[in-house]
Amino acid sequence: MKRKVLSILKYTILTIISIISLFPFVWMLLGMTNRTVDITAGKFMIGDQFLLNIKNLFASDLGFTRSLGNSAVIAVITTILALIISSMAGYGFEIYKSKAKDRIFNFLLLSMMVPFAALMIPLYRMFSSLSKTPFKFLGINTLFAVIVPTICTAFLIFFFRQNIKSFPKELVEAARIDGLGEVAIFFKVYMPSAKNTYAAAAIITFMSSWNSYLWPLVALQSPEKRTVPLVLSAMGASYTPDYGMLMTGIVIATLPTAFVFFLMQKQFVQGMVGSIK
Image 1 (cartoon, rainbow, N blue to C red):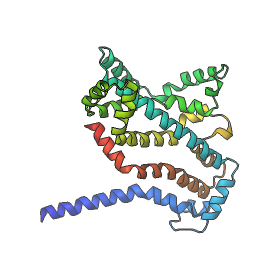
Image 2: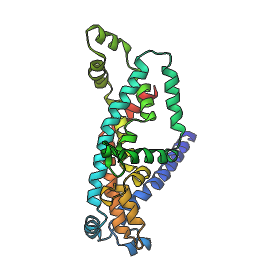
Image 3: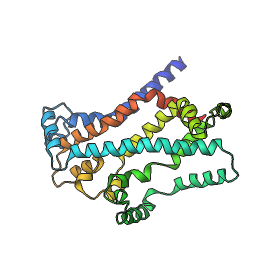
Image 4: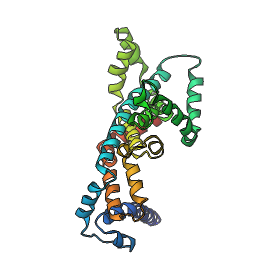
């Protein structure tokens, strides 16, 4: 009897927490079907303004459609480069032996303690200087200025190294005996066996890049280069914000990350568990 009561209490608490967690998303879905006056009045019912909000969103002067393209380019390129570079770094830290290896890795982990706000000014000055060189395609107000600082992070290197700890080193030795080079071993032996780890890292990187706000706000100065978070922020900061249109934009901006997560949800869980082991 006591066990049954505890079970009921547990599921009741979980249900309450779930409702509280889902409430903002439900409010957002309902808000995208209502007018601003209805949203500010607290209307919690499905309205009839959905199509009008969609029309206003894509017809707005802020360029929401263009921002979707910018965010997609940044997120996809960042994810691909981050997976390749960070996994190679994590692989190198774990597979190859060196006395200074652990010291360098510890220093790399210490860099995670530095807040990004402290790095913004040096990053801005560095990319500003690139605008006056042959590498101006990497300078301020270019999409690559947002991509480059995030293609290799200490967290992803740590994440891949932890996973590689469980990777059988005998496979590497056997591949070397068979005559494979080090690069071929990485791409043909390690990568195919680490699909779950790559899936988990891809979800983390894509979501982080898609939702990034602070650095794109500093680096992208032209309206046509804005990403989705910047456009949504501009919508909410207007003198008379259209909350129906804003809610619609937030829902649409949420769809790509939700799609990527649910597409690789199983691999994400297995990859995270594998990295913890």
